[in-house]
Amino acid sequence: MKLTDEEEALRAGARGAAARWAIEHQIKVGEYLGAGDFVAVSQAHIMADTESLGAAGVEWLERLAGLPGAERSVRIPTITDPRGTDFAAAQRLGQQPWMLDLERRAIAALEALGVLMTNTCINYQTIMPPVRGEHVAYGDTGVVVYSNSVCGARSNFEGGPSALSAGLTGRTPRYGYHLDERRRATLVVEARFAPRELDEWGALGGIVGKLAGDYWQVPAVVGIERVPTSDELKHFGAALASYGSVALFHLAGITPEAQRLDDVLPPGQAVRSHEVGEADIRAFRQSYALDAVDVVVFSAPQLSLIEMAQVAGLVDGRRATVPLLVVTSPQVKPDADRLGLTARIEAAGGSVLSGMCFYQSYAREMAEANGWQRLATNSAKLVNIIGGYGYRPALLSMPACIDAACSGGRIAR
Amino acid sequence: MMFFASAGMGRRVEGRALVAKDGFSARYDLDRGRGVFSRPEHKLAGESFVGRVLVLDAAKGGVATAWMLHEMKARGMIPAALVLNAVNPIMVQGAALADFTMISGFDRDITQAIPNGALVEVDPTGERPFIRIVARDAQHM
Image 1 (cartoon, rainbow over the protein chains, first blue to last red):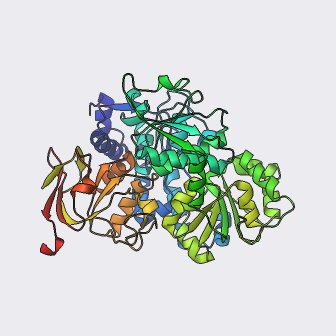
Image 2: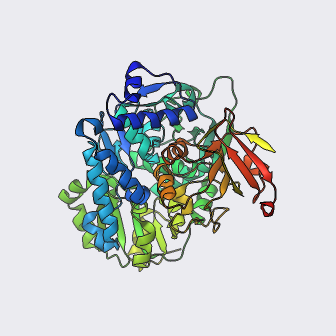
Image 3: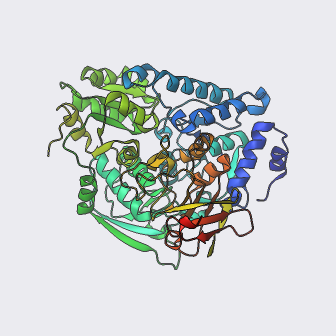
């Protein structure tokens, strides 16, 4: 990689050991992925829950945090993805003291590095959405795919170590979705079905993700006639990224880089095409069908204020008879409290959780502690992930999830 | 037989190949505590990954693998190497942090080229990283 004088100085340790480690890490990654140089980034977003970090990762962060103050601080706004717990609810969730201890240590280390503990995977709805053309270094695949596709920003998937590196150096290797040529469509998908519920948007995202297949594929979707809401695109993108490892999509006539399909097609080059119809959506949902569940979870991504209001409206006057977990961000939670949404959900027996994400919060151990084996959710992303943690998931609409929660877990056919 | 990859990192390793035409994500696919593939739909569900050279199709899933390889290595519950048709940045970032052996990008489907259970050598250290079949039947180890 070609380095500027400033980057050579970082590599030589002019800004201390943390930045030196960071740029060495970035060079290793950049050279593997064919980056020619670095690009300055304006924000970084770090995924660093302790279920992923483990004790080894926390100790690693603590070593960085133990450096002298001037040598360890991030130099651009650097925020965090959800944590592995909501401390206020940890006991109710069956989480163990060692998990909370690890979380506290990770938080202390990240704060010592100057990281803002926003603990959210919906920063594009709540903190500071990136703008078109803005180069950023975001973690959380849902954050990246939304920011790239809906906002027109430029980021690759930046895992925790790389997002932290970007925070420390203020730059990232220029490869992948920082480059114009990588942002063109590699497949076209015709949607012959208009999703209505959030789980249907997620199902469509999951199907397109499977068709796409890997990180370097960019699907362009045609046939979506109604402009979707931010929550709908959040579920679509999160599932697309989850099933396909996809970081960028275009919706013809809707997303900013694809006002016309031709805007994103590679000139003079054919791309493969597919169709997705209602039968495909039905089959996708059917592959996650159960008769009953032990727990109902709204999470992955965290709920917006609008989704919180929708859940509150659906539970009013009812009573959840299996655990109903509603997970939102620390930015949405105070408004949900102020507007009475939290109280309405909790009056119906639900639990509103803040700053965590279900699958990032020791999901396997929570299952064992609470006897949860079968889980209902309206998140296609969550059903894709949670099987690996030993759950059997059901993908339902938000109203059907609430019905299940208020019917002893039974799912109506 | 030797198959060259377009990129690689880490050290030279030798081990028994565990092969499937399926993806890889440490969070989605593994029970890292027990060292086995745990996602029921995965073609290697129930198989131990510890010490094996995983030969798989594409990197999948979220960003957690960037930390998890490091955590798995610290506990000694990690594959010997990862050989993929297609990487995503997360696998590269995770391998870089963990000093883990990985190669990717072939002129053919590598999951069809390497027999499951074969003894293989993975060498990412030269200009042309490669995987080589040492013995098709690992009984000859």
